[in-house]
Length: 419
Image 1 (tube, one colour):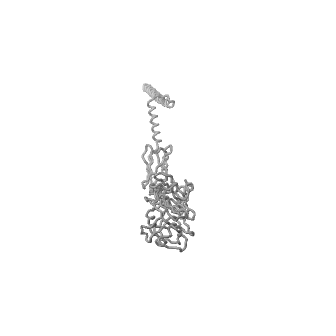
Image 2: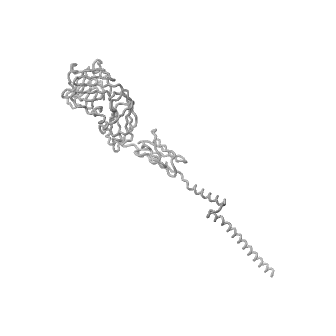
Image 3: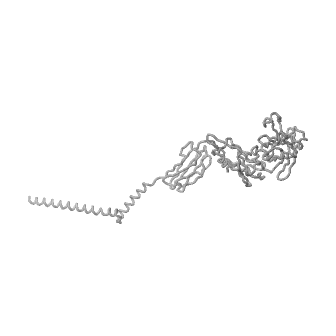
């Protein structure tokens, strides 16, 4: 029994010693395990395991912070009635823009520019009205993003009707005249949207005669053979509050030979010069003392083989009504013509001024006799030819009365421009 007791004490002692040894080993391991941790905090450890662990944590953190670029388009994607009076804008967050393309369903494309940081793109011009646009924006290093919108139609519009007609050939005095369907309040914006160029090149300037009329001409008559191009860029130009232009087109005209006809009502003759040489001299009859003919430079603006003339339309009551006036060519809006006259005696022409203000040449009823002056002059004339009237006893015609802006000096003409 005593052995047994001794044996038990021995066993307890042995167990206690084993426990102390076990605890001691755990403490040592714990102490050894703490050494690398102290090295990381102080930055003195060269442990490969510790470095790899730190890099792994940093990499995970970097990946979690990378964001996808987000593109925003103004007008917003899907807009059905977007405005057309402001430029298109494309911006990106969390990145930069590599490229931006904006195309319309009318075949047009909007150019634009980036800011210095390439986080914003702005179109150089505003979008057109009534057009669907597709925007394709590509952030650097990311996939392209697309958006689309449709601009609204303006509720009120205006157009400009121009003279001469497209692809026509006119005389050297023909201005480019534009009449607008609505009064223009912002003349500067409208004139800026219209250019007239010439080949051979010459300075061409606009002149406003009213809120609805803008003419263009050079300082001197056009050179014969000139090609003239009218460029209308009126689409979406606000001529007056809430009223927008609709035209965007180029129109070409041509100038033919140079013909200048001079009517001297003291001599009662008209001398026709073509390309510097005298072509013909005709006896004429002008306005009488009570109905003097306008003096000055006038341009043929309309031509009729035969037309009706009524005195009531020019404020002269019922003094005349002739249904078949031959070879009539308009010189003023107010009713001055140079025309054939079959009802007066042949002896009148070259000797007496008897008309109500027009310039008359001997002619034949029916307008088919090619031997008479009225027929000859009409056959050799064209729209835009110049007719100069002098010694008529009347003042110079107003520049706005017909296509007669040549009566203004060059300085006065340029004063009527907004440029």
